[in-house]
Image (tube, rainbow, N blue to C red; front, top):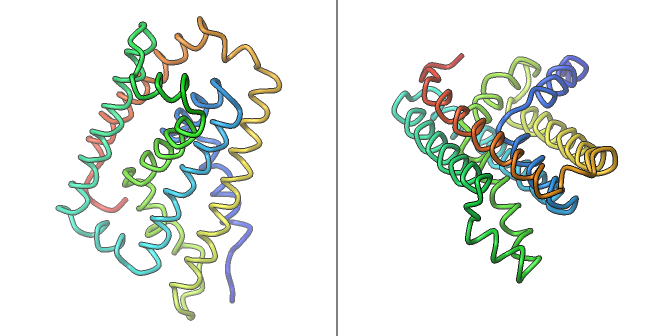
Length: 212
């Protein structure tokens, strides 16, 4: 199998170094607690697993080539990011989200569940994640062999690299920037994160329905 693994690893590394919605979500939970950041990271990577499996079976390829399907995914994803961003933005001005408050106060497991679900939905509803698996991964496979197994292999490598990257980033943030969890800094982080997520949702609406 003549896979360009080195080139693929370079592209994947650069992709993870460029902050996106998953970066904002993971760092926000990491500021509250290291474990929450780790769980949010696992949720984000689980969302990529969904896109990887869809790509292997060709479903996301259909969505990527269908203007209607892509537009629907784009609208849902943009709406989720903007709603989530507004909730986080309001929490930065003293409006505590009831679910998060209840989880943090009464049930640590619920907080972890919330962190995982938020990370999961952030990537599941991101059409750019689907396009990565159907447009970028095929550039590194051997055209003479079946595409499905190769996309699965590259997808597993991508998700594995992401897990190591996110877990390492969360640990570094907690070790070298422990003050991120302080209330006054948390409020400013919520405002910045919320605003950036709203902007990300607005930019997502501007994404062309055509394959890049």
